[in-house]
Length: 338
Image 1 (cartoon, rainbow, N blue to C red):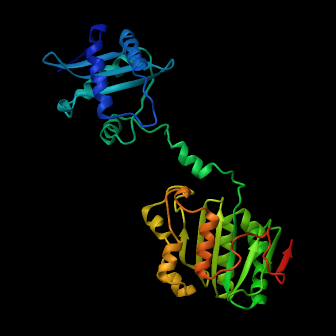
Image 2: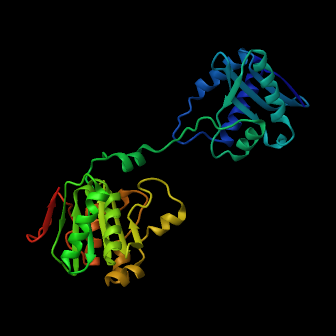
């Protein structure tokens, strides 16, 4: 096996090897490859003396292409060995020729690009001493629109429903915890009992759904009561959390990975557990299952407000369709201004 510098007479051979590589490891689906431009670049590289061909018994079995991309930086644009000749040191020999030439030209560093899915190539590059420097991440624009197409200020709202008729106990808990936990809350509202629940709304909880969950946890822990936090996040995600004495006993998110990828176990854990929900609310398991669908994107489900209304109806919760600013319909509700 020999490695030599490519000449213009090798262009057809190199182009064939390049096309074989493209067929074996296609570029990302979102990239439109300009084949004419790619072939023109291959010609320019060969003309510059930075192309190499590996041969065995006169037949081309691999190729390498490189270029300068700075005074002291080079890039390996292509490195390919035909499948039948792999694991025989061909790629090592090609890379050795590239490195020797770049070193002669005063290049200090050489880099390359590799598909994240090309595990074999990545392993070989790591063995040669290449390390991750920059990660290029890609995402479908449609998915970004689903997740980020609404501004952060887009409506989020929620409410906390505590299983009790004792308004005073909840009022004291809210007055104690909101200033300390939520800080910049403009105000809170505590309703009279409705269907066995006293409901809490808060300005800061509407602006930051994480605060809704935090306040629900503190109220439940302080009172020892069952609390259900439900709400809509960015008009796209419905979330429900059931707490007992401050501990989460069940959690549901209509789009589990709306805020980003999660481990598989966490995704499954965000499906409502009908058995647990029935135990704490009395809702029929079949109804809970039907009212708590999950999907990978919001557009695969009913609009978030409609989904919340259906879930609240199954759970027997009143006043879930708005936040603190809209105010509960109960004229006897106690509003706490700050």
